[in-house]
Amino acid sequence: MTVALTLLVIVTGGATLIGPWRIAPGLILGDIASHLGVGHSHLSALQSSIVWQIRAPRIALGLVAGAMLAVAGGTYQGVFRNPLADPYLLGVAAGAGLGATVAIVGVGHGSATPTWTPLLAFAGAIAAVSITWSVGGRGRSSSTATLVLGGVAVSSLLTSAQTFVQQSSSGSIARVYIWLLGSLGSATWSSVTMILPYVVFCIVVCVACARALDVLSVGDLESRSLGLPVARLRIFLIAASSLGTAAVVSAVGLIGFVGIIVPHVIRLVAGTSYRRILPLCVVVGAAFLVVADTVARTVVSPSELPLGVVTALVGAPIFVLILNAKRRSVE
Amino acid sequence: MSELRAAGVSISSDHVTLVNEVTAVFPSGRWTTIVGPNGAGKTTLVEALAGVRSVTRGTIFLNDIALSSLSERERARNIAFVPQHPVIPFGMSVRDYVALGRTPHHSLFGPPTSADEEVVVDVLVRLDLLGLSSRAMHSLSGGERQRAVLGRALAQGTKIIILDEPTTGLDVRHQFEVLELLRREVDHGGVTIIATLHDLTLASQFAQDVVLMDHGEVLLSGPAKEVIRSPQLAESYEMTLRVVDVDGSDVIIPVPRDR
Image: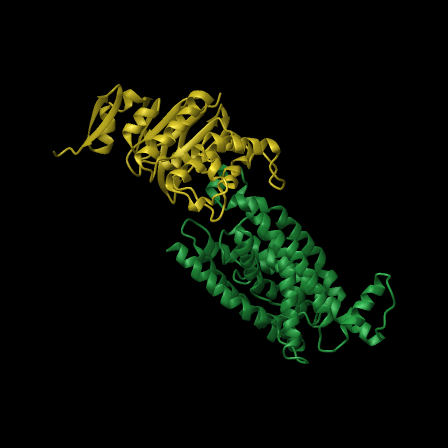
């Protein structure tokens, strides 16, 4: 945990210092120090606003989104007892995307993102995960394969519905499209404060239930015999992690694979107990997304890669590795 | 006192009746074994007795209180359940696994209390698991693993333990080890045991009472010595059963009928 926290501080600091607009790191450090009441800032007004109005909110949004996506992924994996469960694979993100698109296009008339966008995104997310679960996750014959296939089907359906809504309103196509690719580029302090309450609430709930998730690892029947209210716990945790995911999706669009890479890397290092995995997900998830975003905004500078592209580039191979290992352990 | 009683219990799944109108008493402080051919409904019945499966008709009573009226936690403080094939969580240590038994006693969100920890250590010592306590469950041998599973059930601290085929996959020595360990809980701890067993000899040697099930119904129940000698038992298995006395304990030898 200490190692992970140190990593987070270094990553956050590093990301603040790096950007397409070169500002000497020393000046930024001096400016931060002056905000803490030490010494004087030598940043110009322009440089100061680049750091505080462009980079800082973007990093803050990255931290919040990364932590939430990783915790949601870890929670879904525990709830479904399935190592490949992830907000994106289960169709949750596609559902949230549909909800958010409806909010932006239909109700917001393509102008500003309404503040209750996360709630509509949440409705979409819950609808999606319920369909996926009822199609592929229930009953004794349920397996990783049926759940993931159910998620794929639901994702495709909801993505096409989302495209339909998006295309039917020409005024906001561009905005929806950019948002959809997943980017922290439009981050402002207001987008951070919009999702922060949802995310904090959901992370606290999921981390508090980590012990219950450990109990759930012995399966439904046995956890019931141990006094766990399995059905209620499952619904509660799915709702919490879907709400958090929906809030993140409505602010940053679709960024896949964070919820699958981060918990699995943590499992390799820290073991399989959710009491360790979920708190570490908060820290490592936040750090991971900030690093990915720093890569996204610097490698092809002054242009930018969509953040979803970077996470997919790292995530897809890891996903294949997990699938492979899982298959071997089953056979 | 900790008695379980099934009153007119029927259980169906997908319109198939698995357990039909079962009425039976599992008396406090005794070991009752349920025997019967495959598909007799034994597993379904014990799952319902353990409260992890709902019944379609009828009621299961725990000391004259309907089991379904208890909360999950209350029920789990009274009844522990060991399924035939327990799910072994990958990477979990023996100690953490045994500690799962304390789940109904401490808050779901907080850590176990020091009293819980003491119970866990006590069980680890009693079951000779202390040396294995930091080993991963999935790395244990079958016998060690089954001991850890029993450890979880004992750590639950219940007066009733229900087990579905607890000797599955174990060699003769480990079968005896597991059953003797449970017998100690009955004799010294006043625990009520309800277990299904395929091995009729083991059933007669360890159980005080035997219940015979077939086609989802209870055909016979009573003291072990009587039930294993009843013609109905042989009839259910469609076999001839010879009961031989070896040094005071019954040994059942099945013989096919056409020989």
